[in-house]
Length: 391
Image (cartoon, rainbow, N blue to C red; front, side, top):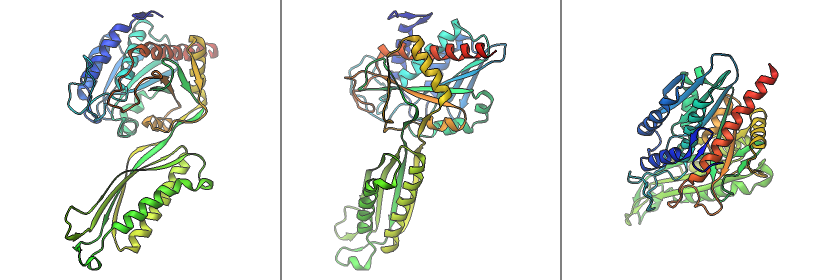
């Protein structure tokens, strides 16, 4: 495959697009400018329909033929992260404290390239939907898209997605049947007691003991191996007790943790056990409690039919690939979509020496844009070929 052009797609143009997206990142829920860049790039590809403000600032490009047939969907993400970029790249982020440290700029470039390819190879039957989803990093975007009535009008028969994977061979496809990556959600806890003089702590209700016991018992839950179907993690992310006032016994505490499981059933049980622990110690210390869950990511589960198309596309294109033995521990809000339509999600190796995701030095490798594009065009051809054989 040429480094500069592949089947009517100018890869250099896609690299330039990624660099522009990288230089002008948008946080979750604030992706209006990013969506506009994508719209300007793809409006000349003659989509049948451009759906805007989908689940927020999301947008979808629909390429529909005049004949009935399969509807094939591909999804990428619009948002960046609240991370300061320290690189000296000529296209480094121009927005203070915001940068594409998860590679969503590269994922968008791949899907934009797919739009260019469809312009040269429009579907003869059915349609192709390119979904640029908002707010993946907060776990809110996919759920918002699915709830949007506009999604129901364009919902594909199958939806495909990918994520770049640092530490894995560049351009190699990583796939797995069933569970591909974990479910996770944030636990936010506020404990309220009553302050008192530090010399008379018995006259107040200090949440220190409850906080300490809750933290210890929550972290011990994954050790109950016979309870869980697969991996379970409880990761503390922040804690705060009282104020820097040495004459005052604390009356308030905060604690946050990430709950992570491979199976949804384990997440339900883990949440229940966590709630029981919190209630037990709040009751014992006579504390009021406010407990919330946020950034809810369901497990991403690959379904057999769309995965079969991925495997056929890998075979027909000759892409290097690896069958994963275990699911990834990280989470992706792509998991929401399998409740709406059959889905499959794969990994795209970003290089064994690539900095990890969310690291200040991370940058999506331009060299793998063509590999992602090759996989997605292969999927379209395999779906269309299967439809032709059935009819």
